[in-house]
Length: 199
Image (cartoon, rainbow, N blue to C red):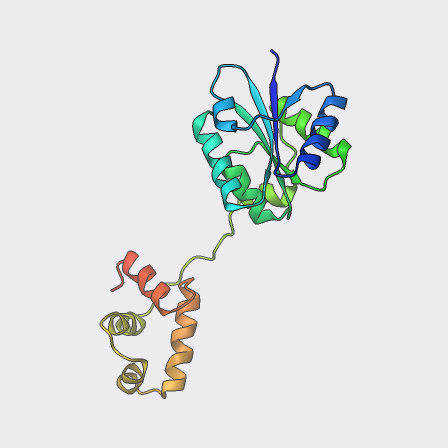
C-alpha cells in the first residue's frame, strides 16, 4: 500500500530540505497547508512535523485524536527524555532531533513507516518504568496528629509547643515526615495524607 507523506515545518528551507532527504529515500512527500484536513481521507499517511511551540504540541495532539492511522515523526529542537516522552504520549511514533543527519532521518522515518520506532533506551525506560518511589512509611500516631493539626490550621509553633519541641526542631521533623510521604511541601503532604485516610 502506498503511503502519502507530509512534511510540516515553519521554515520553508528546512521543510524543503526534509522533503529532499525523503525523496532520496524513494518517498514522495507533500507540504499541505492544513494537516488536519490532509489526514481525513482513507489513505495511509505519514507526517514529519517539527514540534517547537505550544501550537505545535497542540497540533500533534489533534493529529493523534483525529486518526490513529497516521504515522507521525516528531522533530524536536531539544531532544530531551521529557520532551520525547511527551511527544510519544501525544501520538508520535518516533521522535528525533531536528538537527539529525539526513541518513538518521531516513532511517528513523523508514522504520516508523514500517511500524517500528527507533527510541533511545533512556526514553523507553521513562515510558515503561516511571520513577519508582520507595514505599511510603506509615506515619506514627503522633505524626498523624501533627498532620491533622496542620490540616486544621494549627501553626508549626503551636505544634512544637504541644509536642515539647522547639519550633526549629518541629520544622525539621515535619520536613522529614514530608520526605517520607513523598511530598514536596506541607500542602502536598496534607493531600497525600488525606488520600490515604490519615487525617
